[in-house]
Amino acid sequence: MKFPFPVGKADFIQGDEAIARAAILAGCRFYAGYPITPASEIFEAMALYMPLIDGVVIQMEDEIASIAAVIGASWAGTKAMTATSGPGFSLMQENIGYAVMTETPIVVVDVQRGGPSTGQPTLPAQGDIMQAIWGTHGDHSLIVLSPSTVQEAFDFTIRAFNLAEKYRTPVILLTDAEVGHMRERVYIPNPEEIEIVNRKLPQNEEEAKLPFGDPHGDLVPPMPIFGKGFKTYVTGLTHDERGRPRTVEREVHERLIKRIVEKIERNKKDIFDYQAYELDDAEIAIVSTGIVARSALRAVRMLRDEGIKAGLLKINTIWPFDFDFIERVAEKVNAIYVPEMNLGQLYHLVKEGANGKAPVKLISKIGGEVHTPMEIIEFIRRDLK
Image (cartoon, rainbow, N blue to C red):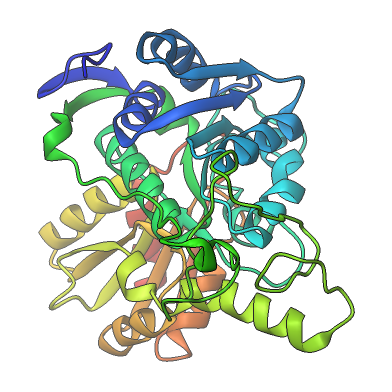
C-alpha cells in the first residue's frame, strides 16, 4: 500500500502530525472529531491523508457525537480514533464509560491545555490526568499513555491502537499543547517494521454468541463485527455474557465489572511502561511524565554535576499504575519529587505507591509554562537544606 507521507525515513514534524501519521500506519481508517485547540492539527492531517487511503473523516457537531461515531465505527470492524482537548474530553466522558462497558477498542487523544473551562486554549498543562483515569462514572479501568517527545507521540499512538485491540478497551493518549505543537525529528518506519495487533474475532458461531464472555480464559472476549452475520446485542446497561440487559442481578453486575477491571489489572506488567535514568544509585528520585519529564531529565544531569545523586523515573503509562514498583523505588531513596503542570495529580498516585517508605514532594506549576530545569533544581536544593 502506498502511504500519503514518506515512510522508512525521518521527517521534521509536529507532534499532532506525528499522531495522525502513526494512527494511519497502525491501521486507523475512521476518524470523527470536532476542531479544538491545540488538537486541531490532528484533525487537519487526518482530513488530508485519510481520503487518499480509502479512510473516512467526519466533522461531527460536537465531541459527544464524535466519540459516539468512533464507537460505532469500531463495532463495524474499523480501527477508529478521535482527538480533542480538555473541554471536549470532558464532554466525551459518558461515552468513554460506554466504550468501557461495551469493551469497544478505540483511541482517544487528549492534547491538554490549561483549564478548567475554556482556560488557556493555546498553552500546555497536565491537568487532565485524573480525568483520563477516573473521569467517567462507576467502577472501571482503561489505559492511559503519556508521551514526552514527538517521536514518543508517534510510537505511543501505535501502541495505543495495539493495546486497544488486544484488551478490547478505550486507550487514552494523554499529550499536551507543547508536545502537540513542537517540531522534532521523527523516524517514520516502513509498515513491515511495525508490530500491528488486531482484535480477536469469533472462531465459530458459539463464540459469537458470547461477545462478553471469556471463552479463552484471558478475560478478553472475541469481538463480533456488525454486518458479518452475527446477531450481537450491545448495550451500556449491565449485561450478561450474551449482551442481554440484566440490570438488577448483583452477581451479573459483579461478574461483568470485575472482569472488565481485572483484564487491565492482571496484565499490568505488559501495559505499564517507564524509563529510568540514573536510578541505580540515586539518593533522591524525580518522578515525572509528559513534557515536564524533559526538564526533569536535564535537572537530574545538572544535580549529578553538583554531586547530588539524583535519578529520574519517567512514567509512560499513567494507568494502569504500578504502585508496587513505586514502593520499591521509594525503599531505595531518601525522597521523591514530582514536578507536574497542575496542582497535584500524578503526585497522589506516587504518594500512594511510595507507601510512606520515602517522603513525596510536589513541585507544582500552572499557567501554561513548562518547568525549567533550574526551577526543579532550586526546589530540591531548598528542600535538602
